[in-house]
Length: 369
Image (cartoon, rainbow, N blue to C red; front, side, top):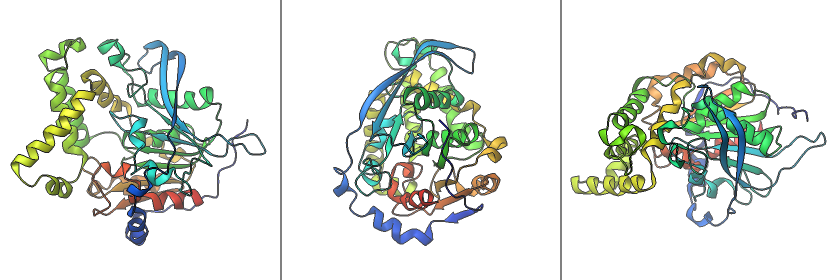
């Protein structure tokens, strides 16, 4: 089937502040909890890719990609899908992260931008994450050294081979998924109508962003109790890694309000990290953080054809706006727009990507193009 034509393109736009839409953002924020039951529960399934070849030269005879989905595909007169949406999660997470009042409750319910009654929404777990094939399934540190290009390849094969979808209305991703969204636009420029990368930068991992990742990698690999990946109990380094992730994920104002004393800071940190360690695995996290080593979309940004709106928040410690990277690189995207949401009541640091009220107005505007 031939891909359907892209919707009308907009001329290049520079970085925009979110202030002109502040009232709409505030309106979108009100009553989120009351809409928690409005979005349907997803169905879940697995797609197994036979003899999957990784960029490292390694392979797996069976690569399992777990995914969640809502709605049904609709097709136009030419047979091409018209309503398929791909949503991609962040490092160490899974598609389950999106099914909460702050994301699904803002997007998937009746009358919302990605209403499940009129969209076919596909939410995969990336390689190494969630219910997809990962080191902790049994191979441990013998699992293939996957990278972002492998993850995008597997997503593409799920969509095209597993679900028989030849065109996407939208690719939207958060954090690592945002970086995957840039790669999707470059590698498959005619495959989607719209792109929305959130909490990401279209540049190689470098600077402080690389430093915290190296700190996670080194803490695990240098831990004697990691035992080359063959531990029988989670090594202490997993806790150190999860503490770093907790530190990077929110903004200082919210953290200070949540834990204004030393005792409260320790209690909140312990509670969050204890929970993460209980659910996590050191090999899985090591592989997930290491996978960004091949990410470098900068040279091919000119290949992106679909209208793209990139949204970051001003209080994002991982992608701080003062670097100026987004402002510089968006000029190379033919139909690109960049938004930096000012820090405030609607933002949560890097985690703003999962609080859709902060950026939903820009999604609505993108889908109208």
